[in-house]
View 1: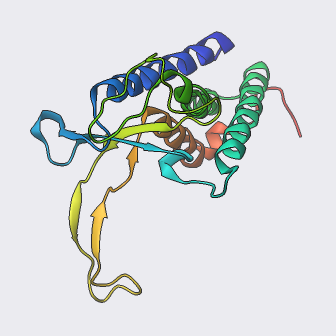
View 2: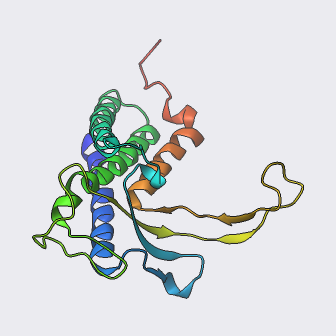
View 3: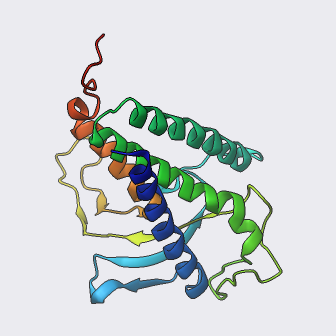
Length: 206
């Protein structure tokens, strides 16, 4: 795969990610949820988080800044990995996977770096405005927008199950965005197609 096609994947994912986030941010109140096509198991549920993919966070006063700077460094490393893999003619499995991971990481960086500057606050009673002149934060301190929610099954775990037996359980309880999904799919490709993804290019020896 050419570098141009790899970059096209990154750009397309990034556009879809940002368009969906901006739409939800400017049309939904915080914690507002709607059922897609009336389905109970597929909802658009607007939340914001300070952290990593799937809402994980680094605690502390400087946790957000550290996380954002780490993301920027990581994107630089992933970008070089993509460039190097294309130049060395590694498999399309690897190149597509890296492209998805790069797009997802970059998409969430945009939120962290810029959203605090270009949006005002979202709340349960107020829908945010883009370029309102009253930003809710500063550079590197934006919140990541999440919206996709799939509560597919809710029930009680069997009582015989160790540790969690008898507890209420919801699958799937994470709320995520397009960037998170891209990262997860990219990692899944690397795991499921490991041998094909990391196969030595033709003509390359140990």
